[in-house]
Length: 278
Image (cartoon, rainbow, N blue to C red):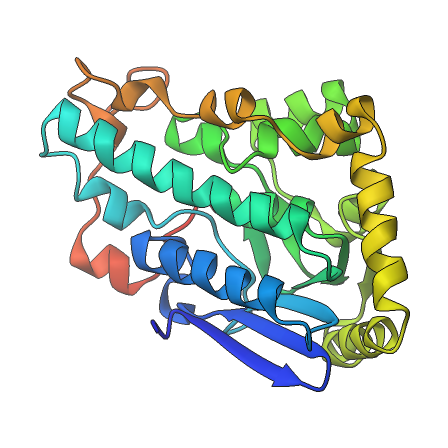
């Protein structure tokens, strides 16, 4: 299995770590596939009573790995479309598994959660953030629209107007604001993040697993209306596929939404690791 995602079992706790710290755990094809496989493994494991999702190196996830996306620019429009359709399918498989898992999923957030990293936070049942963590949708900064089911979850968490503000302006906001908006449950000092998240996970692991699973099903899927709010249909997540990767498009991420040329990354920029949407 790829080392881009690590799993550690501790009693009934499974700690799943996004492990690309040199690029702030930015999402690429390898990490995406590894996370799908790891989550499916956790979902099937009857010994796991709670899962903690975290990032290595002091960051949760800084969105997609733009350098890996830029490498696709020279491909034909059809090749780009097929690649991104496949990746979007895998990305949304991650979200679907997280939503149907019987175990509670807790996000442990330090550093930053941007782009798809924020989508992961929204898909978790509970979230604990360090007081100095930052959040951003940020897609508009690279001239693309949101994905990772964030267009489904975000307005249902913060309200439509606030979701539009976060998506259209792409501004960063802190952990306290994320708590106020309902994106995270608890904000703790950075040096207590590990301790507080572990205490919450152990409390859940010692709790009634069947009751928790039933609570999730009743909360997220008690009726058609509630189910539509928490389980995005295929039509919604497929609608997030960016139209610029469809046949006939030959610019990819070279240009942003205003038509301004965007510089391609260099190896030096990659070494500096500003890979994600941050």
